[in-house]
Image (cartoon, rainbow, N blue to C red; front, side, top):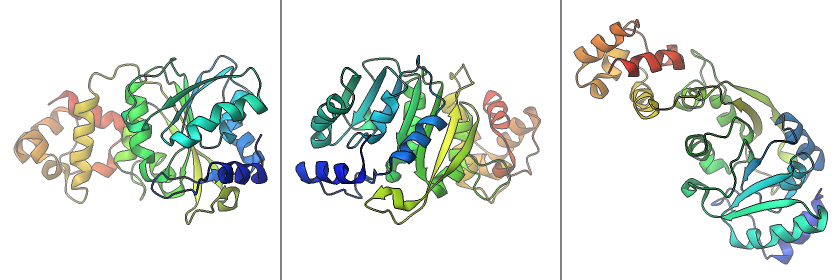
Length: 271
């Protein structure tokens, strides 16, 4: 496991200054790494994919449980160093490295069964949803994201944090908060708090994903309006939206924030 001193030495060696653009905040506390790995509920049969492995702290933690880790890294300097770091600290461990922008990855060398990552704050939700869409073999995951985003991802209908991200992750399966993470375990120290979100994939059929997500976007694009009005453009007219809603057994006077994912799936099925 990498400690704070070694992380800074590696960064100095690579002439890396963590940037906000790439969302680089390196975890320097080994105990937090152990906590993340434990919260991910991995088994020896899992093949986790890690997005943004950075200097390799979490990668090494994952390799203590999983026989192989797929790592997706966009920074070429970090990607070049990672195999050397793994070989030094975990000789014989199997690392499959993909040097690419995570939002553009559509293929991986192996089929991942879990996603475990300290996600870059600026693209955390798009990356998470992209991987859930692209890799149906991912059946669970644990991500560290900005605390505000974590609460949105795990929110329930009617709560102030509930919105499109909550529903889009819920489309695949349940999600819950798995703990807070103090700022002090990062280098550099970020200006926001972080939290962990654990999720599972329980849904097996994704043929309706696009129409369900478009209904969610329409509903929350005008979240203060009734669904009759908010879904008017999506359905064609407010009258058509009302017809669809009634067919789905949902009151046209309700608002998007009152509905759960099953409600939106019913709405999409009636379009």
